Image (cartoon, rainbow, N blue to C red; front, side):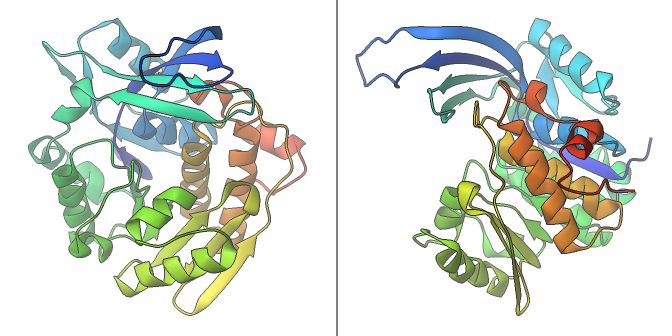
Length: 309
């Protein structure tokens, strides 16, 4: 079944514990609370977009375990087409262990499990789905060769590609030429552009380097310092929104999902970025990954942006 947005990426169950501080090697610390929820950058972005009303299909893999069933159920509940997702026998579904401190900042350890089975061969079986999409979204929690293969397929059929370069790593120059929208946060931008990012001006310089490598548009997410958007010789800035931070988990994924939703609905870059910025900000006001993501109604009640139509 065709979908406007096709997400190719990871599916993880998040195990989240609240702590005052992260333990050092060999140290034990007591946590304040614990809960589990659905996550994975791919799953999060698919959920975020579908939760905002977009037509979304997900390409990914889970294990034949209780976690896999939980992940599929969560996506189906918001209308994501999960029929392309493969169940891999003999391996566990992906798991992320997340610690969150009192300021809402987090650190994450990911065990990929079935996500390692999102191979080039697997995505080639779903070439038609990619071909018919208005936008393809990817991250870097699946094998890099798969990311490259999807970018090649999308490029062949002139389908725009949105890449969230997380977890950040050095990427081949040929990949940049096939990326329409790059959505790094501050630290990721520093790694992929090999630059030190401290403010909007340094983000602009780093983003310009990536444009020269072939990326069409860079959205530099600077958290409390706003979002810098670069395309060709144009630069715009979206100011940060002031919210009470509870948990920053999946805020970047919510931003990406909202950005994709707005873009495929025909919004311009400024409108799409403002919408995504609001969705990302609202996400940090609640605990969890997918559980914290707002609906269109939630965004509308804030009076911050117009809904994409």
